[in-house]
Image (cartoon, rainbow, N blue to C red):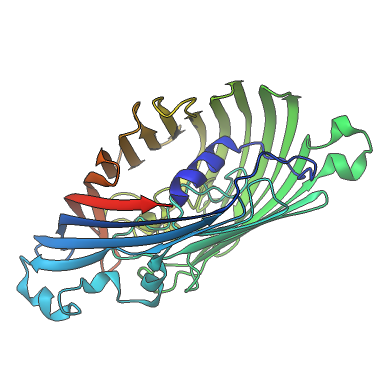
Length: 445
């Protein structure tokens, strides 16, 4: 899944290379591989309107994918939710037959057919990815950090990310929705060591970056106020070897659009990032940061819960994030990530990360955690995502979990559940939930 691969890249790539060495060439995966799957499930989902009753669906989810070595991969497919019963009968008149209308009522929804697209390897000079981005960070995450573009249950866009290494310069571009004017962001990062020195020990140690991000706030996924921000950051590699890296980093950022009145809309941050690989099968990283920020700006502005915060910054009926003032305050930010690769098929495979921020003046706490695991034996896998916003004040909780167990080589079962938040026409959110059970068949060749 693109979510799993992007999770591994984003949480362990806090100190990425500024230059791709063409001599570096890990063993390539050869040949063309096909895979297909069909999942059938029963799902209960809050209606998200009116009395917010629970609707029942039968869901058919076909998928077809192709992988061409390490350079190319794509997957097509979309869940088709067929309404079986409705606690608000008028809703049936709004559907396409029995097909849930909210899943296909805007242009962006048709992009959900693209599950994944990848052109180029992670170590290539150029790489393009498209599809679902569940934990995406732009660069060091100063502006776009652990962002989830399909958090809203009625909005199913496909995003795109393009990365290019041009000599000492790395350029990264991101769009949250390829079919609508929504969130666009970009970073230009310069390896100062390669520009100012000819000594190899100075290469990839002094990285200067400029980030910009803008959300047009159009009706794609619901209309919300536009939001723009920019930041400049510096990363210095204090320790770099094969098993351990320690980086010192600092950044300054500001809103690039209308400012919140009477409160400065800028911030500054200073911190440390470490990454270690004590074993071939284990990698972990950590980040600690002190921040000063306030007004309409904070670091990680486009974060994990942004697709909900754009309607209500905290809670369900508050100001949208673009208009939410934050008192000038200091905060502490921490992030940890762990990846365990299996040495054998019967071993545990694990990717996990968590982040949290505490605002000193207000006592506000935000947190986010992701867990993806294949249990020993290779038959059971699980995914968990938890996003907590202002849990000490006006809280909002987003939780999603899925468990898969393989009974036969081509047959598996699925159980899923979690919370949902439905954007309303008046700009607030309505809380709901979903749960489902199903089976799937697949094959690979």
